[in-house]
Amino acid sequence: MTPATPFPRTLASASAGDEHALAELYRSLAPAVIGYLRGQGAAEPEDVASEVFVSLVRGLPGFEGDEEGFRAWVFTIAHRRLIDERRRLARRLEDPVDPGDLPVTPLDVVNAEDEALARLEGAWMLTRVQDLTPAQRDVILLRVVADLSVDRVAAILGKEPGAVKMLQRRGLARLARTIVPDPVT
Image (cartoon, rainbow, N blue to C red; front, side, top):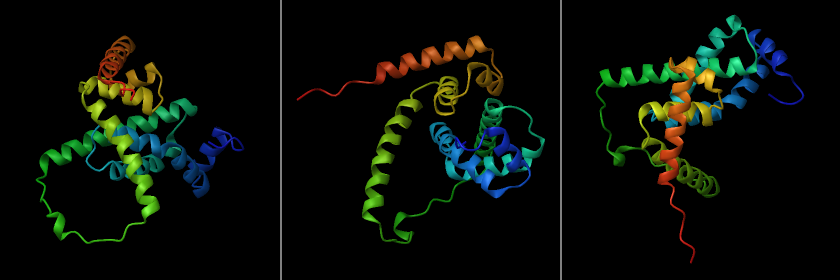
């Protein structure tokens, strides 16, 4: 939330349908939600994130809680939509498209460079996170990307807080072993 608008006021306005308040909630949470979904290997993270925010808007009038509770609620929705996507994809066969059949669009060189750098950084992170066990990946992404407490992550995943701490410790240790410093030349 912006420093000028306290969270309770933003939440109340969004619950009443204020488009500016809804946009503010979206801007503050969308990057973390999409990052979480990418880290979980969602086939279409932006599409799943859209579903998350549709569910958020529908459920917002019934939400009660503080900012931390709201963030946990949003990532609970994201986790459930991710599971829904995986089930949907498991039932549906993909019809592959030849890349040559896709339309060619001109690229904006400045934006393309920025996007390429962002994708390289994201690809590095995704490669490392995919090396974790699914449970470790769940915990690391919810703790780091979503910035949720151990208790909130435990509630979302249906685990005990001690199990979440253990998975986090083991996941971080595993990630630390994969980071090899670049040689100095």
